[in-house]
Amino acid sequence: MINKIAKNIWKIGGGTWNNTSPACSSEDDCNVYLIKAENSLLLVDSGRKKGKPVIEKNLQEAGFKPEEITDILLTHSHFDHCDCISKWQSESSSNLHMSDIGAEYIKNCDHRLIGYQIEGPDYVFDPFKIDHQIKDSETFSIGSLMIKAYAMPGHTPDSMIFETDIEGEKIWISGDIVFGKGKTTGELGAIGWLNILWQSDLRVYKDSFEKMLGLPLPDILLPGHGFTVAGKDYIKKVLEASLQTVETMLKDPNIRHTGLQ
Image (cartoon, rainbow, N blue to C red; front, side, top):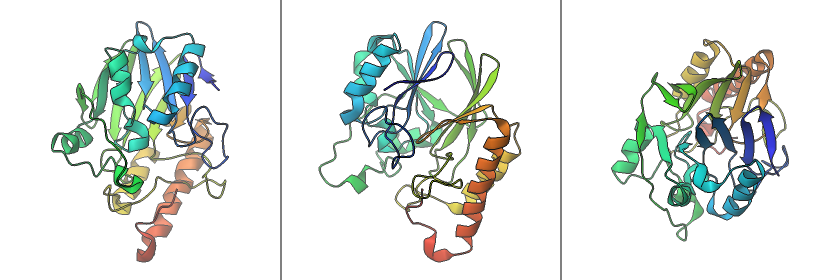
């Protein structure tokens, strides 16, 4: 299933997130987005190996071929977001853009931020080539897109918001920093899973939400799981509810590293 979000933006991968949104590919996949930017074709996150055949079919339904992908933008290092990058790279001459913090972990053969260890001993990590290490507050271009990166740690140290403008609408690509309705309760206030393994930190997560609320808000938020979030007023409610979740958790040291999502 393919979901056209706006002109030149498609959601071509993603599970139901516990039946909160229609499935595009494998249930274990993160949301995978496709963005056409003149002579460039951008894939946002890669999904998992199991879901790749369906994601590839959806890409073709959108009118493109895998070898046409020019760039891959990684929101953060988690395995459900990066698992298939090496396979996409093998089929195209795509350049990978990711946080300089996540890249440094990988260069040092430190795979904690990838988090695949929770999958068990049978998981096989396929290394991938990193072409562009993105710094906080950096502005860079992919095709006709000008993209501004904001470091927003908390879920992981390398989590970033990527801001761009497409057809006059401001877009935030948020990975697992913030979502619409949560997968467990179906209510606002969801945040990314917290785990000591991938260096989650509620205190810096709180700082990140406050930073986001201090920025001019986007028209569309593209999260790493679940539904697309649209409308500045609604996005503000989403951010405020998630900030409230973090503040509530900070009051109870017994739940600072649970798998809340």
